[in-house]
Structure formats: C-alpha cells, structure tokens
Length: 134
Length: 255
Image 1 (cartoon, rainbow over the protein chains, first blue to last red):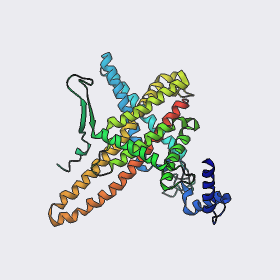
Image 2 (cartoon, helix red, strand yellow; image 1 turned 180 degrees about the vertical axis):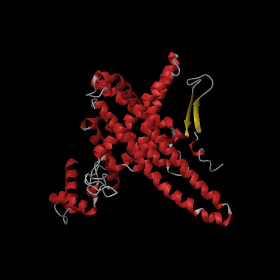
Image 3 (cartoon, rainbow over the protein chains, first blue to last red; image 1 turned 90 degrees about the horizontal axis):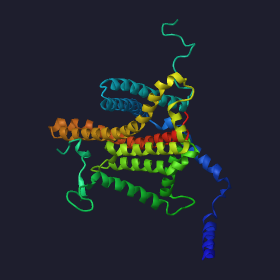
Image 4 (cartoon, helix red, strand yellow; image 1 turned 60 degrees about the vertical axis):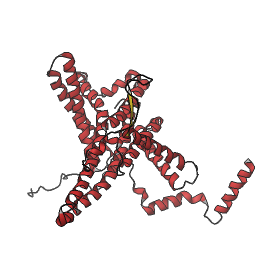
C-alpha cells in the first residue's frame, strides 16, 4: 500500500508539472508578483492597522476606566472603614492620575511605532518664518 | 414597537433546566438564552470552518485553506511582535479570543441575529479571563518579581508611595477598558444602525415628500453598515492585540 501511494503521488507530480517552470526560482517569482500587485506595502506596525476612530475609542476608554476603578476602590474602602467621603475623594484623584498615565503610555507607544515619512507635517521647523514675517 | 432600537439586545430564554422545586438542579435555574445560542453558534461555526478548510492539508493550499492559514499567520505575527516568541505559548488562547470576538461580531451584523458582544457581562467575562491568565502566569513565572510591574525602574524611593497606587489602578483599569471598549462599540453601532433604519420607515410613511427625503437616511444606513463591518473586525483585532500586550507584561514584568 505505501508503495502504490508513493507511485501515485509521484505520477501526479510528473504529470502536473510537465509544462510548468521549475520551482527553483519560485521565491523570486512570488516576490516579483507581490511587488507588481502592491502587496508589499503592508506595514508591520500595529498603529497602521488602526483607524482614527479606533484610536479615539481606545484613548477614551483608557482614561475613563482608570477613573471608574479609582472611584470604586475609594467608595468601597469608605463603606468599609466609615471614612466617607475622604477616601473616595483621594482615590478619584489617584484614578485621574492613572487615567492620564494610561493615555500617555498609549500615545507614547503609537509615537514609537509611527513611521515618519518626509511629506508628514511635523509642525513648524526652527527656520520657518512666523506668520507676521518676523 | 418594531423599531425600538433597544429591543434587539433583549435576552430571552429558549429553554431552562431545573428551576423551582427539588431535584438535581433544584433551586437553580439554568437558562439557555438566545445569547447562549449565538455563543454556541459562533464556536460551532469557527470549529467547523477551521476543521473543514484544513482537512485537505495541502502543501499548496486551496482558497479556503489559505483563508484559515492567513488567520493563523495574522494572529501569530501579532503575538510575536507584541509578546515575543516566548508569547507564542499563549497563541491558542489569543487565537481563540480573536476568532470568538470576530465571528460573534460578524454574526451580529446579520439581520435579526443577536450580538453576543453587545452585553457588557460577556465582554467583561472575556476581559477577566485575560487578566486572570496574566496574573496567574505572571506570579507563576516571576514569583514576587511580578510586583516590579507596579514600581517602574528608575523611580526614586520617596515617590513610590504615589507611583504604586497609580500603577495599581492603571493595571486594574485594563479589564474595564478592554471590556467597555468592545461592548460600547458594538452597542452604540447597532443602536445607530437601527435608529437610522427606523428613520427610513417613519419618513417613508409621511407622503411623497417624506418618501423622497427618506433617501438620505437610506444612504446613511448603507454607509453605517459598512462602517459597522469595519468596527466589528477592528474591535476583534484590538481585543486580541491588547491581550497579547498584557501577556507581554506577564512574561517580562519590568517596563
């Protein structure tokens, strides 16, 4: 059985590839076809896959989730210790700080991932003239 | 009302096990809801698709096998780039999450189907699963060194009492933001779609001028449907991407 199997596959190989080009240059042909089809432009950077909509949604939830968590911790700690409302006030502020930290971390990640191309507007250059010509 | 935009999220029981009275499940009612039905449908669809398309195991893949392999490669590249090759031991976990969220979102786009991910309890359960894996693996691999995650290197000692609570809250906010983002995107998108589709019916029944004016919300609905497909795929991607980034923290706790 194994023998006949082998013969079978070999036969199909020889019949299938008779009038095909050899596979030794297959890699070069694939890369040429990819270049022709424009498939090589895909960026590996994560931020390139994300639209502005997704970025905005991410920043918003990162910020507000930290405040929710901080307030919840403060509220329940107050309930347990009977210190209403002091821990809630403190933890809302700590949660706010954590939210800012989250947002800064996410944007720093995006900035690190971003690919800067020459046509991007990165703000005024140091030798750019001011609007009033000074 | 047929065009009540909230009604599409209503949970209904299909059948129940147990309930009131004695017996093996006495006192507990286990309900098989429409949400559970679509979760089962999602899992069955994914399993059937992956098993059937890769059954041939062709060295040169066919179209459908290529689709399965592309999904594998997409998630594998994502895990490798954000959690390193060490993170690949979590590949089955991330791939399951990605496929579940993706297919559940896509099934929700079919008219009259239920959107599983539009309920925060479902997305929160998924996010808790992620954060539990991060915690358990982080402590198992790094021991108490996992706490270094909350004290970034280079922070002077007198600042630690301020920095540590902030870092802890920042860590605890991850499951919240992960689940709220997915849930809010799906809920808001489906409500918007339903509201604009409702405008067409309301305006269309208000005479010739109204029927002419109904063209505007019609175009809006078509555009929103396309946008919702984008959001459905994108949110699955974001969920899986953040999962692998959090797993990276468990593998390498120092920032």
